[in-house]
Image (cartoon, rainbow, N blue to C red; front, side, top):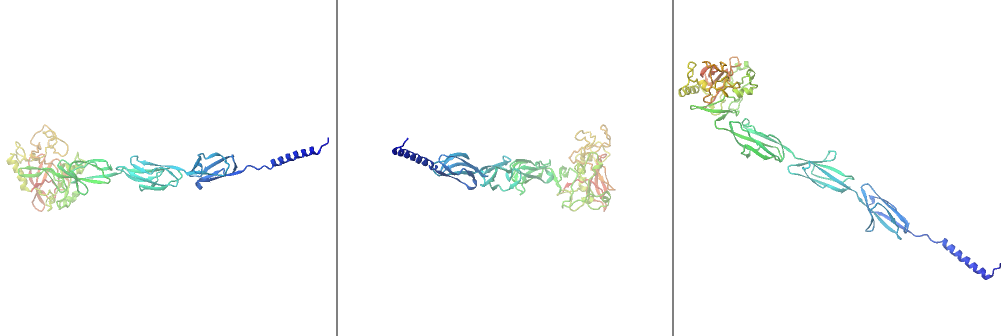
Length: 498
């Protein structure tokens, strides 16, 4: 086959065009790349992945990881929030772009336990970001006070009611500890032995307290005073609200009509017989009126050799039915030598004294002349002076209870036969309230004897250097008789108003 020039030429052109298109296709450019920048709003808040160069339409995985104490918040472009997931797929646009990974500080809860629950309130608890300055303020409820702040382990971390600190990277629990404090209430009686105030002790602040004065039978309540001696109430039962401090109150008393007291505040009933006033109990005082102590605690040997005022108490160990010296004193009084009677400072209550022979005889003569009694042992058809003055408390008393008793104080019965009424069975009648009691005596050798059997009372009249007069009666006698006695003996004392 032969080719003509024209044929060859057209084929050559076609070949060249194919070659051109082939070359053009081989040298075509790649699509353009665009830059994806990722900024972090807080440098130390976290890290991101996914920034780089991408062609338009590329799917890019963006991931944000928060550092400790921070949380991822959202992706944004400018002011536009794109997504709140920390990992997203982003389609690359046909341009460079800058995204922002927004983080925020983590929030931690601050919880305050109030102990006890009604102790108060606390301001400042809630949610905080770490590093925030936190201030807690504790305010006490009524009648409570703030003590301190503690951690969960109970360790004290602050004692001031305002507590400031920096919030850590963790939830935090704090205890605010309050208390309703107790304060001590002291109660006193003045004089001390004249009342028995009740309800001393600890009480809560704000608690209602009721106190009672409880005067003894022989006295009257006057008022309550505080420690500044300000009168706070004239009511024997006094109620008040316990303050935020320890307090003390004193109940004041005065003697009721018909009673007197010695320097020790021992109380004696007063009786009138004729125109004389007597105390109706055996004396129990331990001091002279100048406040000096009457000697006591002497052994029998010391007692008989002593020439100064002294006193003693009949030993309870020798008395069936009494268990202490105090019980003996309350029942029968104390025993004094005559030197105590003669002390210049006097041992009877102020305005009173130990009666002399003349005053004792005046009492006896009054009963004999005015009340037709006898003061001897020969006449039995009349009442004996001593029986009229004796306490009726007696074993086998024919008067029956309460006179008939074996409990102290009491007289023994010489013939312990309730049906026997012979001349030797003397019966105390206590017709005038004198209540003479058989306190016994301390004799020659300094030993006690005759309790329950004899009542011996000093007079103020001496005989000589060693002796003085006393008046005596006994459970076998109906008379009250004057006798000379040694000054060293120990007898009971009755006082008479001057």
